[in-house]
Length: 193
Image (cartoon, rainbow, N blue to C red; front, side):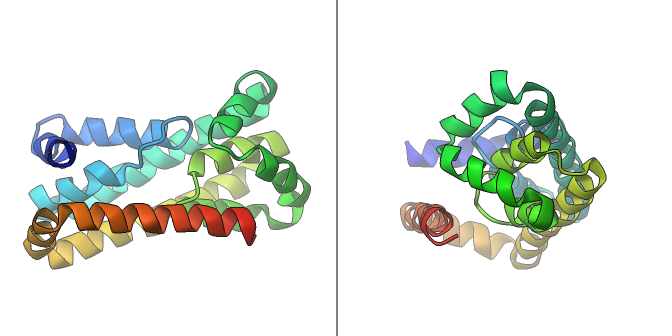
């Protein structure tokens, strides 16, 4: 099953509509969808290394646009939609704390959410609910998401096929390490910050 989950994005990466699929996943991940766009970004850069920067740019622009949609959910629909999404991602306790500190630390919260494994959609929704300045939100989102996606694209572009070979040979171990890091990040955010 794990191999099928790995093979599907690789197959999609070479499809003629791959860029549109990446844009769609990047957009919805920033507001409601739980799967990060990296699952398409990485195999797309591996499949089309010459287009790495264009792929990262599409991912970034769509993610920021999706972030603005999440901001809109928080600003206009927090009580009807936003609260349910925040609770679904297990961040209801953080929501109350975030709203208290958004005025002072909003830029850094958005930047951190855009760079880390913390669900960015929670940050986008809470930014809208807290009334963070939309220009501050957009700038922090563009910088952090751009840094993240261009860094991933650069690493995959630079290391190229050896990374793919390593992942394919060690897929169960790589997946386990990824989930341990992701789970560790959630624990760190929840209990330390």
